[in-house]
Image 1 (spheres, rainbow, N blue to C red):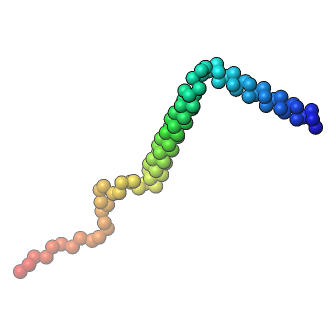
Image 2: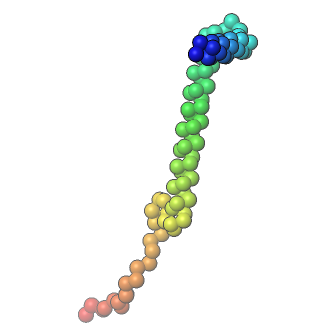
Image 3: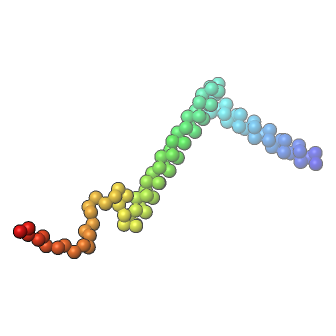
Length: 92
């Protein structure tokens, strides 16, 4: 059991060391910039995801109304009614 613990500990320490070295190479002494860049990236990604979801909802609404044959904005031209028209009577 002790060998497995040592192996997992060694693998974890190697991964931590690699991450720290990668961060040092990418950002150098600018540790504050790293956190700001990560936050801005997350905000930008959130905005992009929200825009894609909105576009998808609008597109789905358009396609579904198109398939059903209904206008999403109501009837702009009234449909003719099948009522029988009667001739006007002259008043005497």
